[in-house]
Length: 159
Image (cartoon, rainbow, N blue to C red; front, side, top):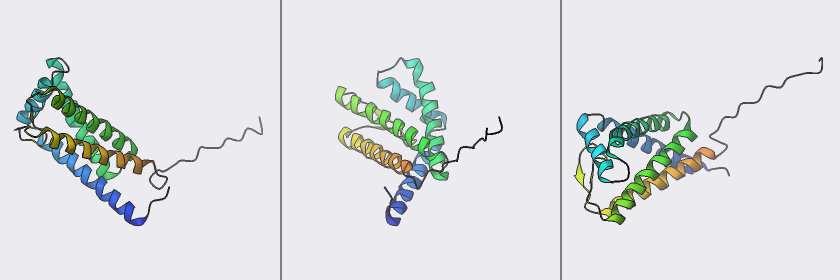
């Protein structure tokens, strides 16, 4: 399916906006306090043992940075869109299960720690972010955005 010029521009703005969002969020998390707060969030979710919290926080922050840069530069667009979708899907599931279990959590998502007081709103925002990433996955699959290399042809007629 071919996209129109307006749709292409809107998808470009969405890609750039989400790329900036991920880059800025990851940069804000690089100091020790937000890293510790994010690890505490994972510990409070009570899904994995506590010793997994800090390595997962570091991996998640680096993934945010890589996905954001790839979206901004449009390098490995399909992979970045897929990884971003996986990331936002995991965050959405963390919030949804915490809300369903009635946990009192605090989020350090944007560098500053704040208690989550409105789970439906926070979960809805995560769902909106997940939907936006799914739109980018759809956009990355269109023929206009992929570059296909032609396979080399070998001539074995002399053999």
